[in-house]
View 1 (cartoon, rainbow, N blue to C red):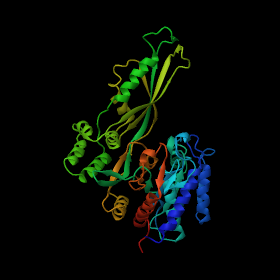
View 2: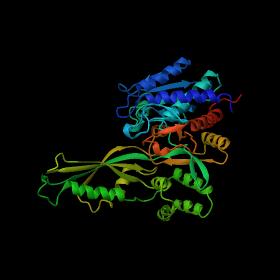
View 3: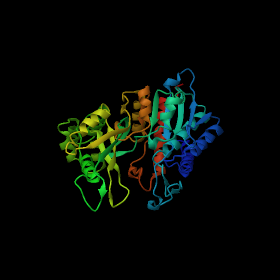
View 4: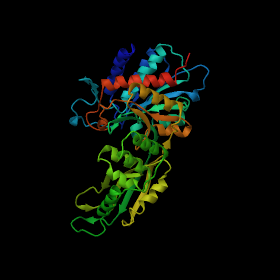
Length: 447
C-alpha cells in the first residue's frame, strides 16, 4: 500500500463527514458556510482561497496552485458542487445530515453527489501543495454553489463575472466514474458529453364553472390527455458522437450474441428493436435516454377549489436534448405527439446547449491508464450523461471537461437523489488511488 494512503483516506473521510453536516439543500442552498470551511482548510495549509458570493449565502470557493512557465489556460480544474437536493429524513435509516461513518460507509446527503468528490479533490490538492510537488500546469480547486438548480449562482455566474478564477483548458468534474458491470465485464465511463435541459410548460385554457355541472371544455381533462401522450411518447432516435463511443466501448467487451444487440443501437432503424432485447432496468432506460430527446412531465398545476372547474391548467415538462439538437427541433418532434390535443400551448422555459468534449486527448489517456492500473480487468470508456452538469458552462469556452469520480461496484448510485445515500470507505480509497494517478500523470512535471 502506498505510504501516503492511510493518512489521506482518514483526511478525506473527515472532510466528507464535515461537509455532509453542512445542510446545503438547494433551494435555498446556503453553501457559504461550507465554502468558508473549505477556505479555512486551504488557508491553514498556506494556499490562497477566495470565497465568491453572488448573493447572500450562495458561496463558492476557488483556489489555484500555479505552475511556472505555463499559461493559466492550460491548467486543470478540479470541480465539484456543494449544494444537494432535498432529503426526506423520515425515510432514511440515518440522519441525512449526520455525516456518520457506520460499518465502513459514510452516510448522508451528498455522500455521492458530490461532496465525496469535493473531499477527494481537497485531499489531493493539499497533498500536492504540502509536498511541494512540481506542477506541469496550474491546478485549480473549485467547490461551487447551485448546481442542483441550474448553476446560475455557481459556475454559471463565475464564468460570466469572474472568468479568471476558473480559467483552465481542462476540467475533471462529476458525471462519470461509477463502475458499470455488464456481462461480467466492468467499465468506468468518463463523461465526455451531456444533454441539455429544455424545460417546457404545457398550458390548456378551458371554460370555468361549477364542478357540479361538467362540460366538454374542462382544461384539467384536456391537459391530462396531453400529459399522458407526452409522457408515453418515444421520440425519434439520434446518435451523437459520445453515445456512439460509449456503445462501441460496451459492445467491444461483450460476447456474442449480446455484443451484436448492443451494436444494433448504432443503427437508428434497428435501435428500437435492440433496446427491447436488453434486460429491463437501468441500463436499458439509460441507453434509451442517450439515443433520444426526452420529455418527462413532472409538475401539474390547476385550480384552487374542488368545486370549481379552473380556466387554466398547466404542466411542467423536463425535456433533455441531445448534442446536435435544439429547442426548436424538440418542439417539432413534439408537434405530432400533440396533434390530437388541440389548444395546447407550448412555452419554452429554461434551456441550454448540449455539449461534448473530444476524447482523443492526453487527459482521457491519463484516465485510461489509471483505470487499467487499479482495475486491470476494467476499461475506461466515454459516456454521455442523460442529465446535465456544470461542465456545460465550460465546454463552450474551450475547456475539455470530463466527469470522472471513480467508485467501486459497491457504490449504490440509486441512492443519488434518493434515500440512504452513502459511500464506502473502500470506494473512497479506490478513488484516491485512481485520481492520484490521473493527477500524477497529467498535472505533475516530470523531472
